[in-house]
Amino acid sequence: MKITVLGNGSASPTLDRNPSSVVLEYRNKLYLLDCGEATQYRFLEHNISFTKLSYILISHLHGDHFLGLFGLLSTLNTWGREKELTLVGPLGLKEILITQFKYQQTILNYTIRFIETQSVEKQQVIETKDVTIFTFPLQHRIETTGFLFVEKMQDYKLKKDKLPMNIKLEHIHQLKSGNDVYENDKIFYKNSDYAKEPDAPKQFAYCTDTIFDPSILAYFNKVDLLYHEATFLDEHAARAASTFHSTAKQAATIALQSDSKQLLIGHFSARYTEINSFKTEAETVFSNTVLATNGLVIEI
Ligand SMILES: [Zn+2]
Ligand SMILES: [Zn+2]
Image (cartoon, rainbow, N blue to C red; front, side, top):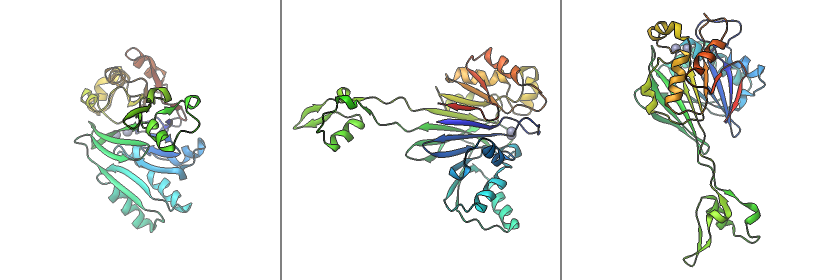
């Protein structure tokens, strides 16, 4: 899974930070998480073809997370997209877009499949042959969900140098599924002699926007990468709580308590001119912390 940061800012615009957006690329499919203003320009900037987009997931309806949708969906139409697009987001998103396109007098060439999220409990929203995507509730000022990507279990890896020349195709399938091969009730090929267990499925959790809320630990554990918002520094913890946002230290606490392997923090408030202090603060709690910066790529 390749994750590219397209935006790391929060509600107020700044010249050097774009609003929230992260794109995940896996097996030639693109999944966009949030679509702040001008996200389509970030795709161009980082040379990622957004015609490949299959899924767009919107965490909540604050402008810094979805105002880029209108431009991006319109451009896809202008460029002649016909392939269906799946849009996952909260109640109201479908209505907003229908109204927008109605008054814009745009008839889309492609279908949008809407999947409405709820912020009451964890829910599976997408299942493909590659990944399963869940939403889970976050505590913010309006209905908000986090997202959890879980890679599908891969096939067992064949030890090609050990495989007999004349092995039957059905036996290869059985070995790839992790099974021993039997003939006449006797073990014919012992799986461990011919195949290796695949790596554990990769997991990526995305939590923005949210107040510091340890109850989200019930929804994910031991993820390879946790994206958690860090709008404020600890010195503004009271402001973070009153606006239902988190501090860098709190994001790191969630990473530590969920046993995450790596933490990516973003959604920095425009009040801070430099962001290195966020990393320094988070690292006092969780050392493997990375700052979301425009164009940063993380492979898990
Ligand atoms: Zn926000
Ligand atoms: Zn928000």
